[in-house]
Image (cartoon, rainbow, N blue to C red; front, side):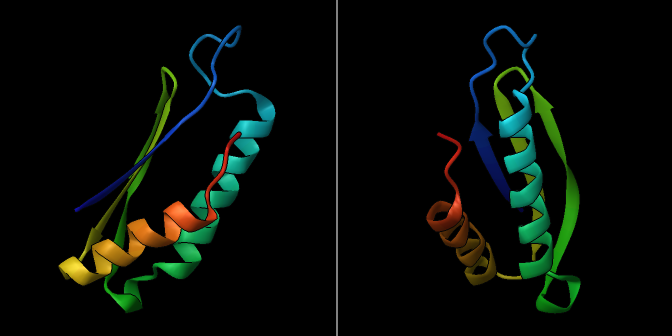
Length: 80
């Protein structure tokens, strides 16, 4: 299982991301879904957004696939 966690600034927003961060998180999730398809050995489980964190949960057939998932996320993600 691969769990990707993104942190965001939730000040004055009751624990939820502001509009621009929320849009960016959606873009990241959509991009991951395209890159990490069922045919490539991934299964999207879901996401949780609350209290300064966005969590995306994926299953991967092999350790190498999970590692690729994290490396690509680190290179393409910036919420600041």
